[in-house]
Amino acid sequence: MNEANLSEQKTEKAVLVGLSCPGFTADQDTNEQTMAELAALLETAGGEAVAMTLQRRPAPEARTFIGEGKAEEVKQLAEANDAALVVFDNELSPSQISNLEELTGRTVLDRSALILDIFAQRARTGEGKLQVELAQYQYILPRLSGMGRSMSRLGGGIGTRGPGESKLESDRRHIRRRIDKLKEDLEQVRQVRAVQRRQRKKTELPMVAIVGYTNAGKSTLLNALTDAGIEANDRLFDTLDPTTRKKRISDTQEILLSDTVGFIRKLPHHLVSAFKATLEELVYADLLLHVVDVSDLNWQTQAETVDKVIAQLGAQDIPRVMVYNKADKCHPDVIPFFRPDEGVKISAKMGVGLDSLLEAIEKALGKGKHKVKLLIPYSEGAVLDMLHREAQVESIDYAENGTILEAVVDDKTYGRIMAYQIED
Image (cartoon, rainbow, N blue to C red; front, side):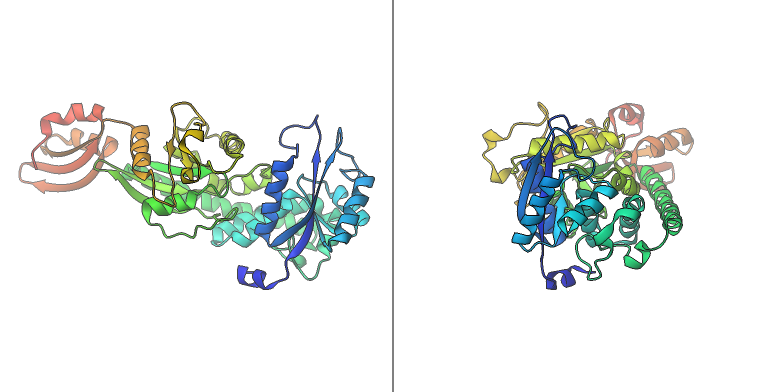
């Protein structure tokens, strides 16, 4: 279902429900901030939040998560606002979804199902569609016996996009086979990426990966730096498929710059797993640009969320530059650095601060780069081999008395080849 069709459909109304438990772990605790984010997710999926309620109790109720009294209140809210959906900010068990649908008479979705629905709309490439389908089946499989009303909604809508009703009605064995096939296909994608990474290593171009919370401005930054021409809209999860472009950041340094899927609080674990083929690019990056939307009042919490996902992927030790985006919307004195003495304040949309960012990238990748022209005698084959391994060779030519190279070298290599340097 494409977005043009979605715009023609009647907006689905929903009641949003959250649970705040003092004894819960942080990623399960729900507050007004995450509820506002849930409303934005619903809007992104094509729905409208017509009512919102937050239940406070010492612990979740096993049968209905929020208690039958609160479930009755939710039912009344839905009836009063003509809402066909009830969306929870927490992850629900299959039995809880079934019980809540019976009590409220409405289709019940949790946060994971809503995010998956958005991903199903956003996937454009073959790889993106494979990853979304795998995540959906991994979510659906344990819930087959309790999906209730959401499986019987013949008219479609939020929470029903993706594999399709006929596939959802298949038995578990079929779905498990499909999951295995999707994993095999994505493993092939990972192998292709591994080959591409080895080829990049041969070119000696450092990989710089743009990471950040969803809607922080990652695609806008890539466009501003490289004229990539990718779509960049003010909405959540606008980019699922990564784009990589070359960028010369100085006379002696060229990089590969790649954007990634945005992160979010309570990002489902199976989603991270399904997108491993894409996200593992971070693990092999030489530098991370952590883009933060400082115009958002909750930017520090969002930055911490991104840090946690980076750690989950095993990329926590990769050097990074903090990029404080949308700084044009804030007074400079009210933007504290997320980490002391680290970061650049920019506006990707306005093109402000980009030169400072390029300088910060070059500094983070290492000082002491030298662009040199060399004449290596044919008898010095070992020196030539060393340069191909340790330098960025930009051109090569052959003269009567040796090999002429133009290359970019670091301080260590420069000290070893000074004797071969010639004038242009």
